[in-house]
Image 1 (cartoon, rainbow, N blue to C red):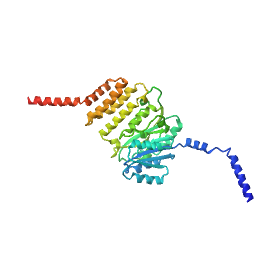
Image 2: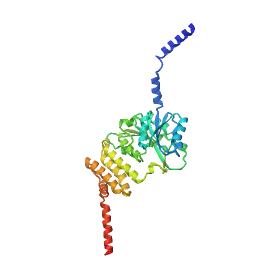
Image 3: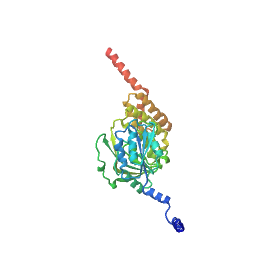
Length: 367
């Protein structure tokens, strides 16, 4: 027994002495985190039971493994909950959050608040990720440590079309570093085709540092508003032109195919939010750019909708009274013409003109 006590005491002393020379656990953890940062992949889940299994597998099968996969079940009335549970039993990286139906924006925001990763990625649960996408993203973040985000290529395929994800090869030469300096337009520097948030991976602190989140209540085009407000906050972005994301279009029930009235209602909210956030835009000609962007999205759609006068009144009031008139925005000839057209529709004077011309034609016929 005495020999045992002596050996135990000697072992304790050796371990105590070695502790001064060995690196601490916290240092090792920091080094590991730098070498293998965590990506929080957030998926808002609603009525996608036919596509969820296939889509979720493309996230699980990423060659980069240090992921947390946050699935926010947004009150989906189908079998999405069972599919999620089946996946979670097989993959410990999956976390399921269940909430009452509140929309994609709220689901994404809830996912962000629950995230513990170094980087944030929003993925739609009916699309596909190329297997090496997130591994290449991490490599880029390691190379360019001061960037805000990595943008990778996105391609669109018709819903139902077969796709071989392993056919997408990688070319290191297709990476570009983009920097927006003070006074420059971020929309010129970071030119993009479409506003899908699914082709960006962001540093987590980018959101809180810039007061960014997805707008609650938008039924469609939430990516448009988020992207438009996020661009002015970006200083450096690494653009990887290799295809990393497969976006399936024309899926039955997808919000991207929403009816015209729904889209216009969303753009009414988007217009208000952009006007409210005017101070974010600090580059030369920003007011004219904002106005041009909004009119591009509004006028053509308003012309086609049945309740044209109602929507025209909303848009004209927001753009003219709360933006152009309030901030003394200089108008191009094109935008002045488009605002006048909105005013005509808002007043109903064009409808009255058509009505009078119809009455005059009847009078001429009768005489």
